[in-house]
Image (cartoon, rainbow, N blue to C red; front, side, top):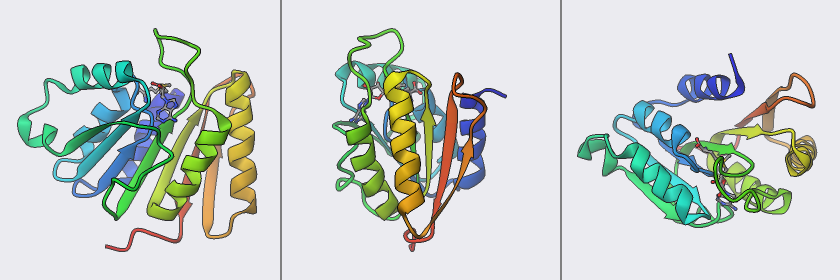
Length: 179
Ligand SMILES: C[S@@+](CC[C@H](N)C(=O)[O-])C[C@H]1O[C@@H](n2cnc3c(N)ncnc32)[C@H](O)[C@@H]1O
């Protein structure tokens, strides 16, 4: 099982069909499409700072029936601000890094990823973060783990194989998700 299959298995295990989820980095839309398949009556919000990411996601979702599409909101915005999303939120997923097949100069950064994660910890019961072993990705992973280690009220599992392979950090927050 690779890191993407692992992340999808974790989404499936922790999300019920009627709940709300956020894809914080929708990019090519693979995660958004998978989350949409799980949320048969729930709501889904997908963020990207690049219009290209939203266009690709929109295209990937285009075969979904209107009943599902009408419950998906695409947000051309940074994931530092989740105030648009009505609570409760069950799962927020991050797939960090750059948009494959696009401008590699635009990628997630530790400062904005941490700012977003702090907001995510306030509103979501589960958070999944896929990290990559390039230079900024390693910095992000270290910053995320340092934040989690100093925080109370969270547990997490770090699916780490080696510093040359992608990893998945799966967080459970004790705080939110009351209906
Ligand atoms: C690795 S790609 C995501 C892949 C995607 N989840 C998929 O399934 O195809 C990372 C994406 O994060 C986006 N991104 C970078 N910084 C962001 C931010 N602050 N807020 C939201 N999206 C951001 C990039 O534009 C890029 O499309």
